[in-house]
Image 1: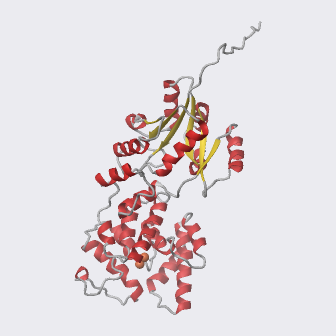
Image 2 (image 1 turned 90 degrees about the vertical axis):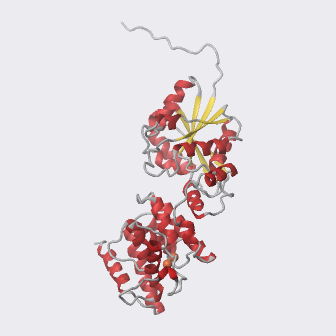
Image 3 (image 1 turned 120 degrees about the horizontal axis):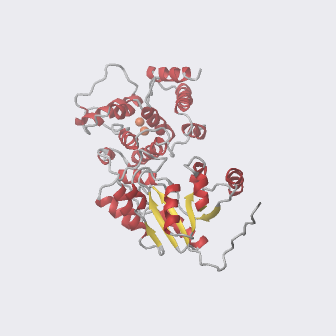
Length: 393
Ligand code: FE
Ligand code: FE
């Protein structure tokens, strides 16, 4: 016999608390993080926003450069003035890898019956599919995607893709903000650049007081550079840092090598920093500063990391069989934002995709340019070209 099931319906309407959760590594927290929270408050009117710095973010196992304690403290400073917003130490206290589905499970238990919203930047949307247990996340919370003006993803297209996978829609909100990332903020901090346009004042004070993101040797190297070369060098560092994670290159090595790469560009041959420097072969003048630069990096700044030294040593000529760091510095030098030549955009797109193919195309461009302008072709550059051409077969 089948027994009739009676469907249960709630007899009273209950007040549903709305809680928005905003996670991230906050390394460091920046102005756009604060803007996202404010935009979410305006759009969703949550009773509470919980900012949740991760202990170890699942996709960034080796990247956090400030300690969890510092990242938590900075988040508290940044959100102190935002009403109905608290910073939680839950993930940091829990330790280990900080999985969103576990955190949401914890919050669902702590706030039974609450409507949870999980905030992510639009750039995270494409990664969401690879997160651990996205279905669990979506059963516990609504996903809220925060889209920055000027850097937008197309919501209708993304909704289609999202719905076909999860049978649920995300909530899209728009906000205006600047082009800033934590990676960019770390490089600017290492270079001693003005952080005021990008970070809350209290966070800047905290970074300075605790010397966060400082990289030994960087500021010293910059003192050798004229303002225009310093700007180029910052462009190289920002470009290298941006792709360091993509290619599993330590960000600190990339930024240090970038800061050092042109350190000897304007140095006289009789400068005390170059006493003892010698080359056996004849090196074209425009190439020489890569060797003198590596010499200064080693002897004046005490850099011992061979990979960093080689990234400086071959940043102009290239060479066969370069390490990923060497390639990244060579290419960032050639393709940083202030570079402007025919074909640069195509090469920039390649930099985001494939270091070896980008090396081949960049060296090809370089050789063609040297031939056209009558510049001397350094044999090592030609060998590098042949090497990267050979890798394509
Ligand atoms: Fe150079
Ligand atoms: Fe350069």
